Length: 332
Image: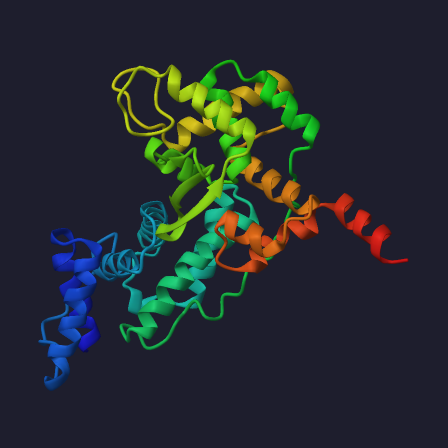
């Protein structure tokens, strides 16, 4: 019961303190509560009429304290809101069949792939597992909902010829600098969006990145990226601190969608609608190229900011030409 009190208390104060302050407060509360027993005040049963249960709001706040990104929290809230709007039940009354029917109907209406559907399943499952762990519910109804199988398409990196065509298709200094930084650093588009001029160290040829999981790391600039960045920065007349900014006033950093649109426009100049190029493809290309040229897998893991090496190992299984080359060299 104390955990329930603590979570409700956290919901009440979350908007008034920074994340680290909240952690300190909750730790102090844990210490102070040691000599007390908690019980919930009994009240009359109220008919459920809310689209989003209070427990979902509590869950989102707890995940925020755990350090999840705003985008991830938004996705969690959206999927759980849709689920409870459909079922019109309180969390304690949800059954396994409710979840199965919702997933079936959602895919039928929205026409999403099994891969996308499984991500929704994971969100729902994560919520109910948390609710059981925190003793809000006795049984996790999502426990028997197994992973939805889907065909995992191999990640295709750009060839060196394709990369060169993309470079030549750039029309502005900003476009050239963006492509070179994406390729040289292997950064995520979300990391590129918040990158500041002060994060670039031209002396040591490195870039300070801040992104997924609110983690900091460094990646590095090759010669082409360094030259392109310097030319772009020197051409700017604004005083904005961000590295990649809008061209029209008010000058501000380019968001994720704007960067994706710029890359998409560059791609269309070469491939039209035949090949879809996204900022993330440059990340694949960086990793694949580095692996081909003998960069140790552990170094690639650090460069890309992967928490698990299993994620980095995906690149070792997606380049058939690299496997063939290694086979010819090793299996003799």
